[in-house]
Image (cartoon, rainbow, N blue to C red; front, side, top):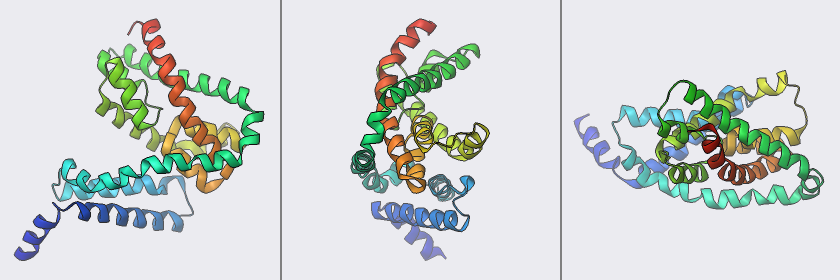
Length: 239
């Protein structure tokens, strides 16, 4: 047991160990999700995050040590995002026919998502930095962190808000769609892209290609719309 402890102390500092563990956690979470019939509560991304975080806490491993291996996975986010253009291209005729409705609904969704969050925090007398950090919570992480930093927020805090928003959305979206009687896959995809960004898009792609295409489109457009309107909203709200 003593020798195993020393071996573990050595291995946990190696980048490839945490890369391997992350991939293993994903496979475990995906297997559970399949057995659960892709239930909202068994989302593999959420489960993989929880399992990996629990292991880091149990082994007292710092995030810096973990990220030295996980950064290889982060590198793949770029190609994965570009790959979203494939289903968008396949559904381009549908997107083009509904482009006006897409812009109107995305603008409304972006402004409500950012404005409601900031107004609630303002009513609770939260610090200005926290309010601004929460504003871009519905934008994909890299864009949201850049927006927060430029406007005086905390990028790290924004990243946490973005992840919490996406994870919460993944858990409740089936109920929201059912109660709201949202059956059109185009509308579902747009909602997922705006409210749940990458996690929602990944889920939509596993369910319906059209929904995945509209979710991918929503991620990009939501980032542009939020970056344009959020500074104006901060001034209008007097934040």
